[in-house]
Each structure stands twice: as structure tokens, then as C-alpha cells.
Image (cartoon, rainbow over all chains, first blue to last red):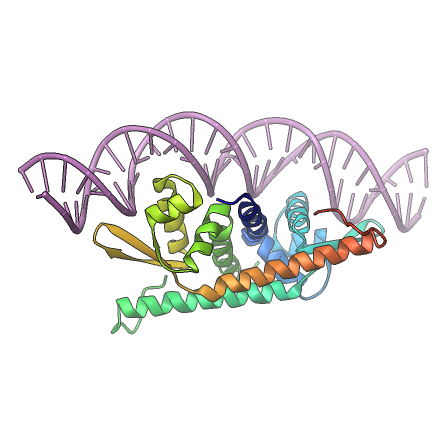
Length: 115
Length: 115
DNA sequence: ACTTTTGTTGCCAAAATTTGCAACTTTTCC
DNA sequence: GGAAAAGTTGCAAATTTTGGCAACAAAAGT
């Protein structure tokens, strides 16, 4: 494979990898409301402060969020809110196709298997 | 955290996890052109047939692709092409913000650091 | 200065992911 | 029936990711 293409795929993969954890998505979701500091986010999603800090640094590393220091606390904010909207849209689309496929497989079942 | 919300975040994370590998993205990119069989995809991206098969099964598990058997070969096809468009759009947006942030940090540098 | 609060980092063990090889299944062709 | 082609699966090793705890750094309050 072309090395330039490979590099681009790796870049994309890094962004997706940053999104590939429930807690990171939960924190991003929280950040849609407003900027939050680390200990607030940690409390909101129910994890250790140090773990939250590490997750946030991963999100920052790929540019999904940014931070701003105010005294002793660090406020994180969403850089590109529309990214999450796009993610939701993609997810809805996938789930829609999934459901459609199940309906094709079990056309007459009122309750299709909860996939 | 609400258990229903957690479940939704986990679902989203699974989809992103499926996207979080350069080879899987490469194969999805190939699949935008047309359906391909496993050995074609493996050759295109330069990996073992068995590894390609496993990557493809991950993509299928979350509903990004689907397969159809024709004789001895299995054709995989993209389920929701627009998902990849959305992903590209999200990536472009993030990179745009990243560049803007770098410009703010180094306003007068003709060549901002290659991030 | 000392203490408190807030975050980050280092280290380590546990868990998950990835890869390559070999074995196996299924379908086609002779 | 037997061989060949295309995929899948199982297993073990290597790599990566994650989580928790303790140590550390920075800023603010007393």
C-alpha cells in the first residue's frame, strides 16, 4: 500500500482510537454542555481523578478537546462540537441499517432480536 | 452514571473501536469503490488472509459492512457509505481546529509545525 | 512558611488487541 | 472420490491499553 495513504489511515485511526472508550465518550458528552474541570468530570462519570486526567490527555492529543488553566484547576472544553453530532449521526445510520437487516431476516416478528 | 447512558456510550465505543485500526480503515476505503472478497482486500492492503478475515468480521459485528457468499468466495460490501463520509468530515474538522490552534500559538511562522 | 486543593506523571499488574501459523470447513472443478 | 481455492477458527506470543495507587508539581488560602 502507498505509504502516504497508510499515514492518512493511521491518522484517522488515532482519532477513532481516542473515541473508542465509553468513559471518554461520556466525558465528551458532558463537555457538550459547557467546559468542566477534571475533578468534576471524574465525579460525573464515576472514575478516579488520575484516570480521568489520562483519558482527557488522550482526547487532547488528537485535538478533540483543549484545556485552559484557571488557578489550580484545569478547564477542558470541546474543540469541535460538531464532531460529536457527526458521530451520533453515523451511529444512528448504522443502527438503522442494522435494524433493516434484521427485519429482512425476521420479516414477520413483531419483536426483532435486540441486537 | 445512569446505566442506560452507560450502555449507549458502550455501544458508541464499540463502533469507534471497530474503526480504530489503520488496516480496517484501509479496507473500508477500498470498499467504497465496490464490493471485494477477502483475498482481494488482503492483497490490496498487504496483510495475511486470516488477519483480513478477522478485521472484516469485526467491522461486520458492529454493522459497518455486510457479506454475501458466492461459491467459495465471500464478498464484503459497505453497509452505510455515508458513515465514512461523516468520518472524513469529522477528521477534516478536527485537523482544521488543530491547525487554527497552531496558528494562534505561532502566528508569524510561515510554516507551522507539522502536527 | 505551611496546608489544602487540583492535576499530572510513574510504575506495575491486569485486561484487551493484534498477529502469524496451522488446522479445519465449504464449495468448485477434475 | 480427490484436489484446489477461499475463508474461518483456534491457539500462543507479542504488543497495547487500562486502572489504581503513590509520588510529585503548581497555585491559592491561611
